[in-house]
Length: 209
Length: 209
DNA sequence: TTTAAATAACTGACCGGTCAGTTAGGAATG
DNA sequence: CATTCCTAACTGACCGGTCAGTTATTTAAA
Image 1 (cartoon, chains in turn purple, blue, red, yellow):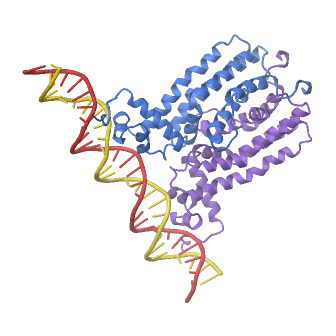
Image 2 (cartoon, each protein chain N blue to C red):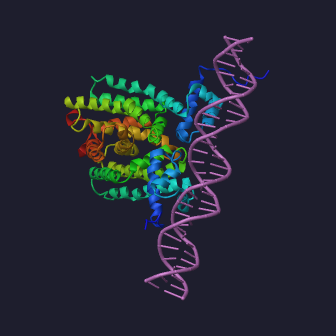
């Protein structure tokens, strides 16, 4: 009595397929990703993909959306505590981001969005409108308020936001792209800690300022 | 008396083809780029591509190499003046990078390397070994020296280098990926100026430190 | 027994790469 | 200076493999 050749699992399939697709899409990019490969990794035949997704593009979008969606709210929360001193908020924001980047494939999705931004402008748009834009905007807003209270030095709040977030993005990309080809390992959490300390009070030794 | 259907220009062809290929590869990525499209933009027939390049992959590598190569030395020079105070060196480094990013398609190449890093690991390796690694290493070295002289505060020099360069990378990516889909325009030079000021002496107002 | 789920064989468009043929334009000749 | 010859440079139709998407068929399970 051999086990059945396959089982009907309409509930789990979409998730499993998305997971497999995320792997392949991030490894190869959209165009070079093979549906046969995705099906194989999902433990399913190619035809099955078409039971749950209209076509390759539909699957790609589903993958990005499902992986991005959970992130959206998480960071906003970190800024709710806007009564705290700016230093504390910035600290919290950075460590929250680092935590997120540990558990979710932030780097992988970023890589996909960057790599396919030419072929899927609306995908880059989703990323901008729902992730990067709001995050930067939020930060810039916080910074502006803190400036009004005299907590943060003068300067374009948006550029300050880049100063704050840039190293984290660079860290994520380093891990995703360069670490696999021999780049020295990078501890994102350590980066978040040291960067938040450094950026707030300056890279220069106090005696030099 | 009509002008000839084509001209023999063996000297210029490779450059022209590379330029066209850079455009198409950065727009579409490697897999989605069509050789017919590249040939068309280079004002040449598809067969001509094969007179100068072995195959699509050879062309791709040539494009990346030719575009990356000129950059390699440029930044190193900025650090030669290592007798100057660290603040001056950092300033020079950042503004030099911004200048470079204005004139060369740094963002476009970065996008290509990131997007195709899965399919061309050795390309990511070239980028790491010849561009990112040395730059970070150079910066980290400078920082370490400056720390020894008491100019720069304690902390992992490499992480400090991320703090310094991250925002610039983020700026380049923002311009390349998000600005075209509605992201607010970003002035890289302004970013370099403000960031170098800010990061050296701290984001917090002096009264808060 | 019915039907929804899944498969595996199939199709056809598309595109990287080839190559037989064409042309520009310089060199040799008168 | 005109003419002929020669070949590197170039073209574009074509071929064969690949792969997204379809369909006829089989099977699990209600």
